[in-house]
Structure formats: C-alpha cells, structure tokens
Amino acid sequence: MSSATTPDLQDRVQTITDAFVAFDESRAEPAFALDTEDVAAQLERLCAYRVPIDEAVRTLVRKACTDADLERSDLSDDIARLAGYGGRSRGFSRTMLADVDEADQWIDVVAEVVELWEPRSEKIAQVGLLGDESGRLKFVKWTSADLPELEEGEAYRFESVVTDEYQGRFSVSCNSATAISPSDDVVAASDGSVAVVGSIVDIQEGSGLIKRCGADDCTRVLRNGRCAEHGRGDGEFDLRIKEILDDGERSLSALFDAAATEAVTGISLSDATDMAMDALSTDVVAEEISAQMLGRRYRLTGSVVGTYFLVNDAEETTDAPDGFDDDAVEPALTARQPARRLFAEELNGTTETFQESDEERAPVYGLTPTGVGVNRVFVVGTLAETADVGSDAEYWQGKVFAADSPVYVYAGQYQPEAMGVLRAAEPPAYVAVVGKLRTYERGDRTNVAIEPESITEIDEATRDAWVAETASQTRARLEAFESGDAPFGEEATEAYGEDLSAIEAAVSAVVPDDAA
Image 1 (spheres, rainbow, N blue to C red):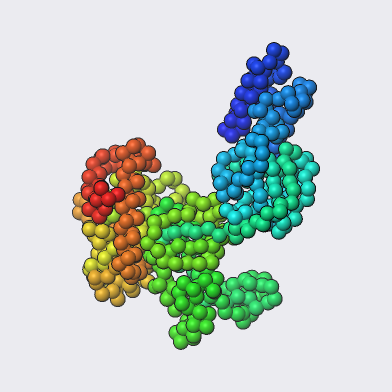
Image 2: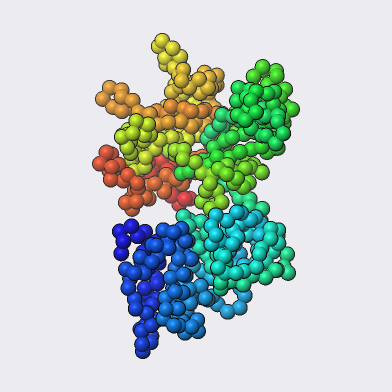
C-alpha cells in the first residue's frame, strides 16, 4: 500500500477487503480476485481526481461486482451497502437531522431545501442545505443518481440517503439507492440558530459608533473617512459590537448589529451619536460598552455567517460555558490563545515558561503545575489593594483575590486603560482581569503576575460564577495530570514535582469534594 495512503483511506480499504473476503468464504466458488494493493491503488487514484471518498468506494465496489458478473440480488448486505444498493432497514423510518452523528449510515429524512449552492464539480448535480425542526445539514445529490431536481423552499421525503463525515462535519448524500418525492408533511425548518455560553474577554477595535460608506449597496466601514472602494465620503453612522467570547479552552468572534447592541446595552444609535457629540469623540461609546460587558458571562443566540457569530439575542447568565462544540459554531472559532481560568495557587505556581517553536513571534507559555501551557488568563476576584509602585513614572499594582488567595496585576504606560482603572479604583471591588501571564525574578525566587489587557469592575454574581467555573476546570486539569493525559504533564513533573495538594486544597476550599 502506498505510503501516501491516509488513515481514512486505509480504513476504507480494510472495510472493502473484509466484505469481499467474507462474501467469498460464504460461497463455494470465490467471486473476487482480491488484491489489497490494487484496491488501495484504485481508491487513491479516484481520490486524487477529487472524487469524494464515499463515492470512490461505491464506484470501486460496483465495478468489482460487475466484473464478477454478480447481480444485486447475489450480494451480501455488506457489499450491497458499500455499493450504495441498500444497507438500510425496510420501511420508512424518519431520522432528524440533528441526530446524525455517524458516517456510513442509511437513513430516511423529511426536510426542506433551505438553500442551494453552486456545485463545484460536474459529478454533483445539486448541493446545499437541508433543514428540519431539529437543525440543518449539508446535502449532496450526485449526477450519476439521476434524481429529481430539488427547489429551494420545498419540502421533500428522502428515502435511503447515506451519511458522510468530513473533518468532523456531517452531511447526507443522495445516490442511486435514494428515492426522493415531494412531502405532504409541513416542515418547520430550524433557522439555524444555536446558543453559546462564555465570558466576554475582549471588546475589539471597530466596536461602538462607526461610519459606513453612503454609496448604494455598500456597507463598508470607513477608515479615516475613506471607503476602500468609493474613496472619501461623509458616510452614515451605525452601531455594532465586535467581541471575543471565551470558555477557557476556545474563543469565538461574535458580532452584534445595531439592534442587538441596543438590546444588550440599552444604547441606541441616537444615544450613541449624542454621547459622541457631547464627548467630541466616538471612543466614549466603545468605552461604555466595555464597562457594561467585559468580564461578564453571556448566553448568545444566533447563527454563523462567514467567520462571525451573528448575535440575535444576548442575556447575562451564571450558567457554565457551553455550545462551543457545536459543529455550526466552528467557522467562528478563533486562533486566539484562550483565557485560562486559574486560582491563585495554580497561577502563582506557574514559574516556568516555554515556547513551542523557535520562531521570533512564537507565543510564550507558562507551564502550570497541572501540565497545561498558559498564555492568557482570565481572573475574577476582589481587588483588595492598589498602589503606585513606580519610581520615574506611574506603575500601578493591584492585589486581586482569585478565590481565597491573591494574585498581582501590574499596569504601566503600555496598559493605559488598565492603569486608569487601578488609579481610579476604590477597593474593595469585584473586578474581572484579562491578561498575559508574566514571570519576574526577585532575589532568589521567581514571582508571577498578570500584565492586564483589561480590568473591569463587575458584580458579585459574576465573581461567584467564575469561582464555580474555575473550580470545575481546575478539577479537570488535576484529573488529567493524575491520569497522565495532561498535555505537558511530564515537563510539569520535572519542573515542579507531583505534589499538587495546594491546588487541590484551593478547589476544595471553594467547592467541597462532596459538593462537586
């Protein structure tokens, strides 16, 4: 077998081989002159010509059956399924689209054709999106199947479609074994909305009051008074929020339009315009949005368009983070380093750092005692003390209790917004801090602090929700370390040893073992 054969292709070759061998063993006279290397070579050739692997398998198996002069009625169930001739139970049994979670399954579907896309291959007759009451799923109708033409907005009954999977995404294929007919059932197709829960860790540039190009059918945002296509112009005001929602493991880009922004902040486009005129700056609007939303946890409901999660509805919540594993959310996930939730005991113990590559811009990670690489952290706690510890210039220190122990935050001229918060703060106050982990030497020991990207005053409910979330995530890291599944467990053991009792005690102090 070729060294270039992928694991998925190897698996398909083995499946075909097993089916052929089992069929031959059931007969007095073998039907197939089986050559595993030849099967692999044929599949590789078909895939090299951009034939989808499931169609390549069906093509190869059908050809083998034709060469062996076998009729459909002669085939075993396994070979008939691989050839696309059957493999499903008798009788129509509807499967909801949201329940599709395995490839190579024969199912029946009643769904509306929500959207049709332009096929990128002559082998594909139609491709698009099906929808039923449970969700949406991509479909492909192959030209070779000679099936009826489908129309957007119409509901159909699909018998014997086969499920496919590519890079974790599921779809259904309509082939020659499929029957399609108009459906008499009314299908209330899902609008594709999903819900995600996480903490807002960044209000990005371009949020607040903006101006868009005033030319017809152009919605580009003006940069320094210019549209990239139409040049300089007065433009028209609009209101939006671009933010990062984070669950401690991943983050996604979310976008609020003017209506969604007003609903979540209470700031209308008219209000925002008045605020900017009074302050002689549009920055005041983004600052107010940040003060209201940064560090707080939200449930966002919406759909993904391009690489943004477009928000239809938002509400503050103390529920645990959720929804980032939904396939529909994946295009909006970012490559940004997640903001890890760490109690003070684990954060202050993260004294070793490393880089995964020698590239100049490769991120620096802190190696936690639990064996995880941490670049960005999210800490919510009580700001107990502030002080200007600078000598020649302002350099503010904040002491924040992340549960029952403190961590230290330092902000200077390169973190002006955070420094302003520390300067104006009146401790004690609950704050949310997002920032980078930094180590520094003092005498013969290494200390750890946070270099803040943002500091925001929040309420007690947000603090309590963070404590519960951090306890849960810390327990998961402790369990992974103990079982040997921590990403950098060996390195952590070498650097710190295996005693994690201080971190375990910190978790038990806020969430007792019998309450976990």
